[in-house]
Length: 88
Image: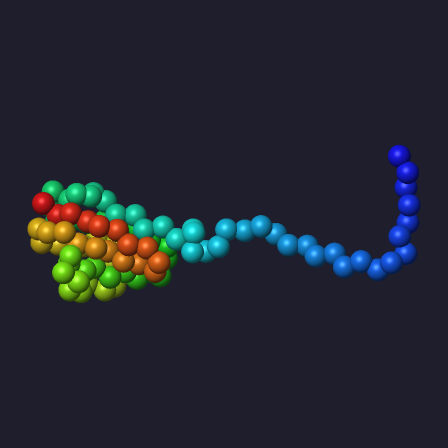
């Protein structure tokens, strides 16, 4: 082993690896399918979502954690993610 000293100046860049907030965003919907129209929605605090019919009609926008929907197929969109929900 040899050891040496370099008198030239070097730039050291220190960075940390992290997962972007976009990847941490979770949309949790249950039960799916819903047998009675009651849907529970879990999102990070203060996040809103929008519910659409499969025809693209907006049904609801807000932050409620529980919704009652008529029979049908819906798309729930929040931030950069969406999920299909079926109400029987």
